Image (cartoon, rainbow, N blue to C red; front, side, top):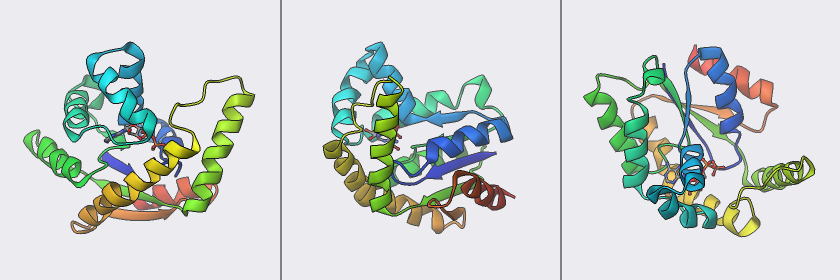
Length: 192
Ligand code: ADP
């Protein structure tokens, strides 16, 4: 199964992706995690991406398409994968279609988590407070200024991606405001 989790920052994509990894036994491919790992490792791509990410902007299509193109070649992705945070632009969605077609693969489903913006800001504030309380380190882009930029990038660049998938009837919307288990149940129903 190849599926995409779509939704604004803080919508719960990561939480739902982790549950799906266990349920479907396929890996979660998070471009955000991959870019943060590259930044932490200090690779050339990581260094380029870090400043953009910290400010809340989107890393170039070329970089993330390259990363995903390599990642889906890996052994563990043979039986399918869950894309979390990719594609984030229509250009990325078109490239993904090409990458899959070239490999004889097909996208099964796009699940869009629908949430309202007020709730997103509250969720991010909660995530930061919990991380601090647990003694963890807060993501450099989890601050009000960067978060506004991330939401704006979502509205202008990523929202059109859902229209792109609606055209081919692969898109299913779920209510991301519900409890975690209820969202999970809706996703399972959408995949059935
Ligand atoms: P969130 O969904 O909470 O915004 P992510 O971990 O998915 O967090 O992404 C963090 C940052 O990584 C983004 O704000 C962006 O800078 C960069 N990023 C992740 N995925 C992509 C992508 N597909 N295209 C461009 N930039 C990306």
